[in-house]
Length: 312
Image 1 (cartoon, one colour):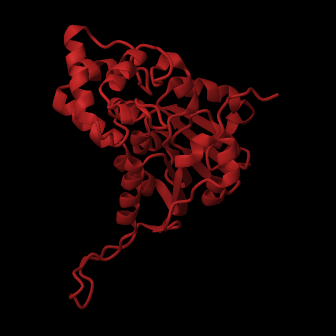
Image 2 (tube, one colour):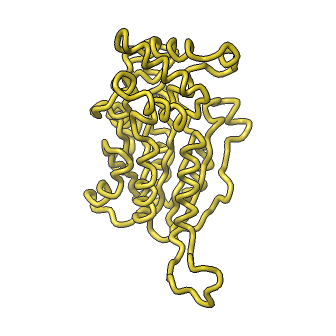
Image 3 (cartoon, one colour):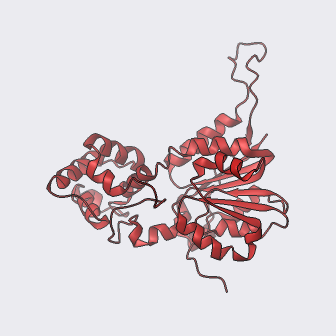
Protein backbone atom coordinates (compact mmCIF):
# COMPACT_ATOMS: atom_id res chain seq x y z
CA UNK A 1 0.00 0.00 0.00
CA UNK A 2 1.32 3.46 -0.92
CA UNK A 3 2.51 5.66 1.91
CA UNK A 4 0.29 8.67 2.53
CA UNK A 5 2.29 11.72 1.52
CA UNK A 6 -0.39 14.27 2.30
CA UNK A 7 0.35 16.14 -0.91
CA UNK A 8 -1.82 16.39 -4.01
CA UNK A 9 0.12 17.35 -7.14
CA UNK A 10 -1.42 20.52 -8.57
CA UNK A 11 -2.89 20.56 -12.11
CA UNK A 12 -1.73 16.97 -12.55
CA UNK A 13 -3.87 15.99 -15.57
CA UNK A 14 -3.18 19.31 -17.26
CA UNK A 15 0.58 18.84 -16.78
CA UNK A 16 0.54 15.30 -18.13
CA UNK A 17 -1.43 16.47 -21.15
CA UNK A 18 0.92 19.40 -21.71
CA UNK A 19 4.03 17.20 -21.58
CA UNK A 20 2.54 14.74 -24.14
CA UNK A 21 4.64 11.95 -22.59
CA UNK A 22 6.31 9.43 -24.91
CA UNK A 23 7.06 6.04 -23.28
CA UNK A 24 10.68 6.15 -24.50
CA UNK A 25 11.27 9.85 -23.80
CA UNK A 26 13.59 11.66 -21.39
CA UNK A 27 11.84 13.95 -18.91
CA UNK A 28 12.90 16.36 -16.17
CA UNK A 29 10.94 17.17 -13.04
CA UNK A 30 12.89 20.18 -11.80
CA UNK A 31 10.90 20.48 -8.58
CA UNK A 32 10.55 16.95 -7.22
CA UNK A 33 8.77 17.91 -3.98
CA UNK A 34 6.90 14.86 -2.75
CA UNK A 35 7.14 13.20 -6.18
CA UNK A 36 3.43 13.43 -7.04
CA UNK A 37 4.05 14.67 -10.59
CA UNK A 38 7.17 12.48 -10.94
CA UNK A 39 5.27 9.32 -10.03
CA UNK A 40 2.68 9.89 -12.75
CA UNK A 41 5.34 10.75 -15.35
CA UNK A 42 7.45 7.67 -14.62
CA UNK A 43 4.38 5.39 -14.66
CA UNK A 44 3.96 6.35 -18.32
CA UNK A 45 7.53 5.45 -19.29
CA UNK A 46 8.72 2.10 -20.66
CA UNK A 47 12.31 2.56 -21.85
CA UNK A 48 12.29 6.27 -21.02
CA UNK A 49 14.02 8.07 -18.17
CA UNK A 50 13.06 10.67 -15.59
CA UNK A 51 15.61 13.06 -14.07
CA UNK A 52 14.23 14.66 -10.91
CA UNK A 53 15.86 17.55 -9.04
CA UNK A 54 15.21 19.10 -5.66
CA UNK A 55 17.25 21.41 -3.43
CA UNK A 56 15.65 19.80 -0.35
CA UNK A 57 17.41 16.57 0.68
CA UNK A 58 14.31 15.36 2.55
CA UNK A 59 12.48 15.39 -0.79
CA UNK A 60 15.16 13.16 -2.33
CA UNK A 61 14.91 10.72 0.60
CA UNK A 62 11.10 10.59 0.37
CA UNK A 63 11.23 10.07 -3.40
CA UNK A 64 13.51 7.05 -2.99
CA UNK A 65 10.59 5.44 -1.15
CA UNK A 66 7.70 6.76 -3.20
CA UNK A 67 9.30 5.97 -6.57
CA UNK A 68 10.74 2.69 -5.30
CA UNK A 69 9.09 0.53 -7.97
CA UNK A 70 10.49 2.70 -10.77
CA UNK A 71 13.99 3.61 -9.60
CA UNK A 72 15.56 1.84 -12.60
CA UNK A 73 14.06 4.64 -14.75
CA UNK A 74 14.73 7.53 -12.35
CA UNK A 75 17.80 9.65 -11.59
CA UNK A 76 17.40 11.70 -8.40
CA UNK A 77 19.64 14.77 -8.06
CA UNK A 78 20.09 17.02 -5.01
CA UNK A 79 20.40 20.33 -6.80
CA UNK A 80 18.74 23.64 -7.38
CA UNK A 81 16.95 23.89 -10.73
CA UNK A 82 19.00 26.98 -11.62
CA UNK A 83 21.92 24.53 -12.06
CA UNK A 84 19.89 22.48 -14.57
CA UNK A 85 22.33 22.99 -17.45
CA UNK A 86 25.29 21.70 -15.39
CA UNK A 87 23.26 18.77 -14.03
CA UNK A 88 22.24 17.57 -17.51
CA UNK A 89 25.78 18.06 -18.83
CA UNK A 90 27.18 15.98 -15.97
CA UNK A 91 24.63 13.22 -16.64
CA UNK A 92 25.54 13.21 -20.35
CA UNK A 93 21.98 14.12 -21.37
CA UNK A 94 21.91 16.04 -24.65
CA UNK A 95 18.20 16.44 -25.32
CA UNK A 96 15.06 16.26 -23.21
CA UNK A 97 11.49 15.57 -24.38
CA UNK A 98 9.72 17.43 -21.61
CA UNK A 99 10.35 19.44 -18.45
CA UNK A 100 8.07 20.33 -15.56
CA UNK A 101 8.66 22.95 -12.86
CA UNK A 102 6.14 23.33 -10.04
CA UNK A 103 7.28 26.48 -8.24
CA UNK A 104 5.10 26.06 -5.16
CA UNK A 105 6.66 25.35 -1.78
CA UNK A 106 5.94 21.69 -1.14
CA UNK A 107 3.13 21.17 1.35
CA UNK A 108 5.30 19.07 3.71
CA UNK A 109 7.82 21.92 3.94
CA UNK A 110 5.02 24.22 5.05
CA UNK A 111 3.55 21.61 7.36
CA UNK A 112 6.80 20.57 9.09
CA UNK A 113 6.90 23.15 11.86
CA UNK A 114 10.64 22.82 12.49
CA UNK A 115 11.46 24.09 8.98
CA UNK A 116 10.30 27.55 10.03
CA UNK A 117 8.05 28.33 7.04
CA UNK A 118 4.80 28.51 9.00
CA UNK A 119 3.39 31.57 10.79
CA UNK A 120 0.97 29.29 12.65
CA UNK A 121 3.43 26.97 14.42
CA UNK A 122 6.37 28.03 16.56
CA UNK A 123 9.85 27.11 15.32
CA UNK A 124 13.29 28.66 14.87
CA UNK A 125 13.31 31.21 12.03
CA UNK A 126 14.81 29.20 9.17
CA UNK A 127 12.83 28.95 5.87
CA UNK A 128 15.68 27.35 3.92
CA UNK A 129 14.50 24.98 1.20
CA UNK A 130 18.04 23.62 1.04
CA UNK A 131 19.09 23.05 4.65
CA UNK A 132 22.77 23.12 3.65
CA UNK A 133 22.44 26.75 2.45
CA UNK A 134 23.96 29.47 4.63
CA UNK A 135 21.30 32.20 4.69
CA UNK A 136 18.37 31.78 7.11
CA UNK A 137 15.30 33.89 7.86
CA UNK A 138 16.80 34.62 11.29
CA UNK A 139 19.82 36.29 9.65
CA UNK A 140 17.58 38.31 7.31
CA UNK A 141 15.40 39.53 10.19
CA UNK A 142 18.29 40.46 12.46
CA UNK A 143 20.94 41.86 10.10
CA UNK A 144 19.24 43.38 7.02
CA UNK A 145 18.81 47.15 7.03
CA UNK A 146 15.42 48.86 7.37
CA UNK A 147 15.53 49.80 3.66
CA UNK A 148 16.31 46.25 2.55
CA UNK A 149 13.58 44.76 4.78
CA UNK A 150 11.05 47.28 3.48
CA UNK A 151 12.00 46.48 -0.13
CA UNK A 152 11.75 42.70 0.43
CA UNK A 153 8.34 42.96 2.11
CA UNK A 154 6.99 45.34 -0.52
CA UNK A 155 8.42 43.71 -3.66
CA UNK A 156 8.22 40.02 -2.76
CA UNK A 157 5.16 40.10 -0.50
CA UNK A 158 3.29 42.99 -2.14
CA UNK A 159 2.73 44.06 1.48
CA UNK A 160 1.26 47.57 1.65
CA UNK A 161 2.27 47.96 5.30
CA UNK A 162 5.92 47.13 4.51
CA UNK A 163 7.36 50.40 5.95
CA UNK A 164 5.56 50.00 9.29
CA UNK A 165 6.45 46.29 9.57
CA UNK A 166 10.12 46.87 8.70
CA UNK A 167 10.31 49.69 11.25
CA UNK A 168 8.77 47.50 13.98
CA UNK A 169 11.19 44.64 13.20
CA UNK A 170 14.15 47.04 13.56
CA UNK A 171 12.79 48.43 16.83
CA UNK A 172 12.23 44.96 18.28
CA UNK A 173 15.66 43.56 17.39
CA UNK A 174 17.38 46.47 19.12
CA UNK A 175 16.11 44.99 22.40
CA UNK A 176 16.81 41.33 21.54
CA UNK A 177 17.25 39.16 18.42
CA UNK A 178 14.14 37.79 16.71
CA UNK A 179 14.43 34.01 17.03
CA UNK A 180 11.13 32.23 16.22
CA UNK A 181 8.28 32.22 13.72
CA UNK A 182 5.53 33.09 16.20
CA UNK A 183 7.64 35.90 17.64
CA UNK A 184 8.00 37.34 14.14
CA UNK A 185 4.29 36.84 13.37
CA UNK A 186 3.41 38.79 16.54
CA UNK A 187 5.75 41.64 15.58
CA UNK A 188 4.16 41.83 12.11
CA UNK A 189 0.67 41.80 13.62
CA UNK A 190 1.58 44.57 16.08
CA UNK A 191 2.69 46.86 13.22
CA UNK A 192 -0.57 46.61 11.26
CA UNK A 193 -3.73 48.72 11.67
CA UNK A 194 -6.88 47.16 13.09
CA UNK A 195 -8.58 47.14 9.67
CA UNK A 196 -5.82 44.91 8.25
CA UNK A 197 -6.16 42.47 11.15
CA UNK A 198 -9.82 41.94 10.24
CA UNK A 199 -8.93 40.68 6.73
CA UNK A 200 -9.63 37.07 5.89
CA UNK A 201 -6.00 36.03 5.42
CA UNK A 202 -3.47 35.82 8.24
CA UNK A 203 -1.73 39.20 8.77
CA UNK A 204 1.73 37.59 8.47
CA UNK A 205 1.04 35.65 5.26
CA UNK A 206 2.45 38.20 2.77
CA UNK A 207 5.49 38.98 4.92
CA UNK A 208 6.38 35.32 5.42
CA UNK A 209 6.09 34.74 1.66
CA UNK A 210 8.43 37.68 1.05
CA UNK A 211 11.03 36.49 3.56
CA UNK A 212 10.93 32.95 2.16
CA UNK A 213 11.49 34.26 -1.39
CA UNK A 214 14.45 36.36 -0.20
CA UNK A 215 16.06 33.52 1.80
CA UNK A 216 15.87 31.13 -1.15
CA UNK A 217 16.40 33.66 -3.99
CA UNK A 218 13.35 32.13 -5.64
CA UNK A 219 12.86 34.83 -8.27
CA UNK A 220 16.55 35.22 -9.18
CA UNK A 221 16.77 31.56 -10.12
CA UNK A 222 13.90 31.55 -12.61
CA UNK A 223 15.56 33.19 -15.67
CA UNK A 224 18.64 30.88 -15.69
CA UNK A 225 16.35 27.85 -15.22
CA UNK A 226 14.11 28.90 -18.14
CA UNK A 227 17.13 29.55 -20.40
CA UNK A 228 18.60 26.14 -19.50
CA UNK A 229 15.26 24.44 -20.11
CA UNK A 230 14.95 25.93 -23.60
CA UNK A 231 18.58 25.10 -24.42
CA UNK A 232 18.24 21.44 -23.39
CA UNK A 233 14.84 20.60 -24.88
CA UNK A 234 14.70 18.66 -28.15
CA UNK A 235 12.77 20.28 -31.00
CA UNK A 236 9.11 19.58 -30.21
CA UNK A 237 9.94 19.10 -26.52
CA UNK A 238 7.55 20.66 -24.05
CA UNK A 239 8.16 22.97 -21.07
CA UNK A 240 5.46 23.23 -18.39
CA UNK A 241 5.78 25.73 -15.51
CA UNK A 242 3.37 26.13 -12.58
CA UNK A 243 3.54 29.41 -10.66
CA UNK A 244 1.75 30.36 -7.45
CA UNK A 245 2.00 34.12 -7.22
CA UNK A 246 2.01 37.08 -9.59
CA UNK A 247 5.74 37.80 -9.20
CA UNK A 248 6.74 34.34 -10.44
CA UNK A 249 4.07 34.32 -13.15
CA UNK A 250 5.23 37.69 -14.48
CA UNK A 251 8.84 36.49 -14.80
CA UNK A 252 7.81 33.20 -16.49
CA UNK A 253 5.37 34.93 -18.86
CA UNK A 254 7.93 37.59 -19.87
CA UNK A 255 10.73 35.06 -20.40
CA UNK A 256 8.58 32.72 -22.50
CA UNK A 257 7.40 35.67 -24.61
CA UNK A 258 11.05 36.66 -25.19
CA UNK A 259 11.93 33.10 -26.20
CA UNK A 260 8.92 32.99 -28.56
CA UNK A 261 9.82 36.24 -30.29
CA UNK A 262 11.24 36.12 -33.81
CA UNK A 263 12.45 39.12 -35.80
CA UNK A 264 13.14 42.24 -33.72
CA UNK A 265 13.96 44.55 -36.65
CA UNK A 266 12.18 47.93 -36.69
CA UNK A 267 8.86 47.69 -38.63
CA UNK A 268 10.10 50.11 -41.33
CA UNK A 269 12.86 47.69 -42.42
CA UNK A 270 11.83 46.10 -45.75
CA UNK A 271 13.55 42.79 -44.92
CA UNK A 272 14.78 41.15 -41.71
CA UNK A 273 18.44 41.79 -41.00
CA UNK A 274 18.57 40.51 -37.39
CA UNK A 275 18.01 36.86 -38.40
CA UNK A 276 16.39 36.15 -35.04
CA UNK A 277 14.14 33.09 -34.99
CA UNK A 278 11.70 32.07 -32.26
CA UNK A 279 13.20 29.49 -29.88
CA UNK A 280 9.83 28.29 -28.56
CA UNK A 281 6.19 28.57 -29.49
CA UNK A 282 3.65 29.32 -26.80
CA UNK A 283 1.12 26.50 -26.35
CA UNK A 284 -0.88 28.52 -23.82
CA UNK A 285 -1.53 32.20 -24.52
CA UNK A 286 -3.35 32.41 -21.21
CA UNK A 287 -2.37 30.28 -18.21
CA UNK A 288 -4.27 27.10 -17.37
CA UNK A 289 -5.90 27.21 -13.91
CA UNK A 290 -7.52 24.59 -11.68
CA UNK A 291 -11.15 23.58 -12.20
CA UNK A 292 -13.84 23.53 -9.52
CA UNK A 293 -13.32 19.84 -8.76
CA UNK A 294 -9.63 20.26 -7.99
CA UNK A 295 -10.26 23.41 -5.95
CA UNK A 296 -12.81 21.57 -3.81
CA UNK A 297 -10.21 18.86 -3.06
CA UNK A 298 -7.13 21.06 -2.80
CA UNK A 299 -7.59 24.73 -1.80
CA UNK A 300 -3.82 25.32 -2.24
CA UNK A 301 -4.39 24.99 -6.00
CA UNK A 302 -6.40 28.23 -6.13
CA UNK A 303 -3.47 30.45 -7.08
CA UNK A 304 -1.75 27.93 -9.41
CA UNK A 305 -1.16 28.92 -13.05
CA UNK A 306 0.29 26.61 -15.69
CA UNK A 307 2.11 27.97 -18.73
CA UNK A 308 3.30 25.70 -21.54
CA UNK A 309 5.75 26.22 -24.40
CA UNK A 310 7.20 23.96 -27.12
CA UNK A 311 10.78 24.07 -28.42
CA UNK A 312 10.95 25.11 -32.08
